[in-house]
Length: 192
Ligand SMILES: Cc1ncc(C[n+]2csc(CCOP(=O)(O)OP(=O)(O)O)c2C)c(N)n1
Image (cartoon, rainbow, N blue to C red; front, side, top):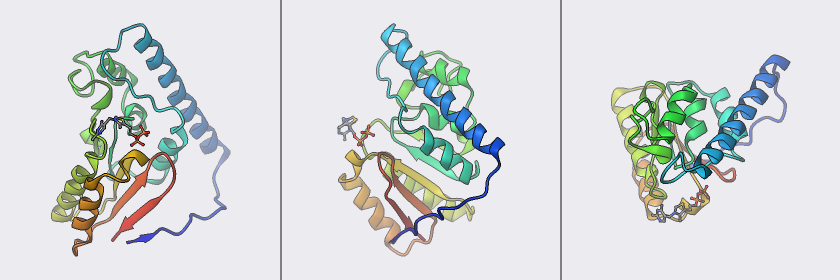
């Protein structure tokens, strides 16, 4: 396990691509504003964890990876789902408990899912997605998929026993591509 090297500070990219990133981030922001209003209007019941402040992370990550790479995250999932190619109608239907939702309206804000884009959803228990992601890594190892697993968590989960147990399992000689990322700041661990 080691800290990854910092990414290069210079990149080549077209202005169209930059604009598309900007548009995607703006879209995510508006999704948050709409969800916030619906929640306050009591159209969304239960929890509603918004994605504001993480737009650049979602868009940047998706720009660098493919839909074969796996993402599992915490309850801030609305725009992770959108970034994976999820439809707005499926996202908002899920938030409002409708059958059309990406989890048939049964999961709500904290349980979005999109298996066809390798998005294995979300856990409402802080840190609980980490061992689940570890299991996804095992599955990839068995099936010899050449994908990276992105296991995202907030800093509140950084001191959870589940994180250390999952890291232990990964380090016991298991060869897999696994990336842990603290979503509220930038610390990356990579096991190979
Ligand atoms: C095991 C567990 N303890 C407590 C909670 C209640 N809880 C929900 S969100 C949260 C804060 C988590 O903070 P962090 O992981 O940093 O995430 P973020 O700040 O990005 O939401 C807590 C304590 C929970 N869901 N699960």
